[in-house]
Length: 134
Image (cartoon, rainbow, N blue to C red; front, side, top):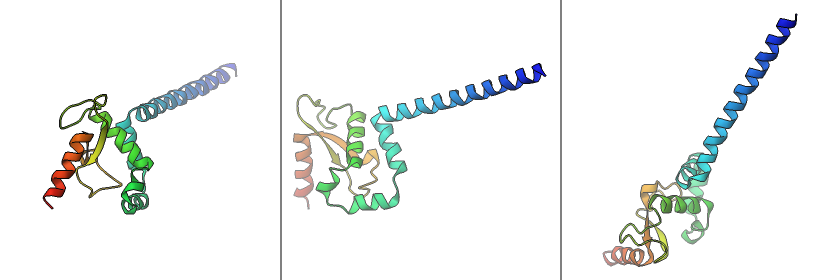
């Protein structure tokens, strides 16, 4: 009887240890996602509903720039571009950096390739060039 009790106790302990290992592994994955802006944006975008994305696409652009979605996308692009202007290479210490939409087709569910980091001067230049040819 003692052996059966000992074996069942060990079984319970091992199962509990397996559960703890699984939980810690999952916690490490989640903490990695939430500490990296690029992974955090992709996780957020993947968990967003199509209804939410349609709402983001329809809202006025100035309101859209105040949303959590835009803040996550913006921080992911700044991280990807290493806080430097993609055109001239100036770091954020020299000029304020802005995130520019290369295309507005997927607004609300942007791929990171749809966005680019630009300094204020390069951003104004891009908008001047695009409006000059319209």
